Image (cartoon, rainbow, N blue to C red):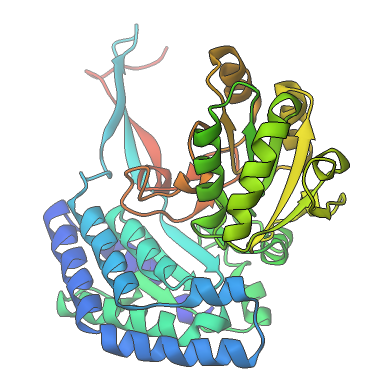
Length: 409
């Protein structure tokens, strides 16, 4: 693609930058984003108006909104990333072989990373900061619903890059059509990794149309299981937070599983709390025998609502809860609430998700909360990266081998 012709040259320059210079650039970008917040918010208002005119889902519009607090959060994330230790060149392991070879396993950049994402303008700044800190070129393809906001953020970033005599192609924002996106996915000679963040249709489109390695950031069909040994108040607090703190994020609980022996006590209390927060509840027949709510069908347990809707199911025991998650979950984030160590260990070991929680809200699945500064996204892959992707997940490695003139006979 013509728009990517300068990427390789920019990559060579970026990978020669030292830690001090990268830190200065990132701090300047954080400052520039704060300085330009009025323009960014004005551009965001255009996107929001367009989103309402196009009748986009409320959950998507909620993720689209940028205000002064979110601008500050974006800048703070960049400052945090700037202060982090240099990840490139870190010696991951070192040893000497019986042949007297001195081997070092050293962290290196992946190279050129393409991120295809929907809504969420903060992804633009978070992604760039993480890629820049790890010496990776950033290629961004945001959704058309956030076009004006994303371009305003990238403009601020590129302004700072050029002020440091760095090529603006260190970050490229592609305002392109679906057909052009298809062509982007064929750029094997330029792009080393594609990271799609969005709904099932976006993920499917990317995976089906590229041979570039992909790390998926798929849907979050997250569960919380209330064990018979749960502390009731703790279970209520965790359930409310897991669902209600932000219903539109991928770490929000979509299904609540309740042990049959605690259901009579727990369900009426949690129903009252959810109703206070305007959450629509759907349940299996056993649940509906205890509380008056709508009926949940098979499709409900397969749905990532990203809305004020929750499915509830009563289960026989921890094993059945695990089987339910294995059948309906998306390998994102799942939790057990229990004071019993045996049941907790069974759940934590058996649930094959990127993040498995004990007595904790699933909404903690977040790069910032994990101490990563920010995140590229939440990987539901098993290979290379899993869960919140921070700096270390944007690196590969190479082996550096030395000896005193060894030859292999």
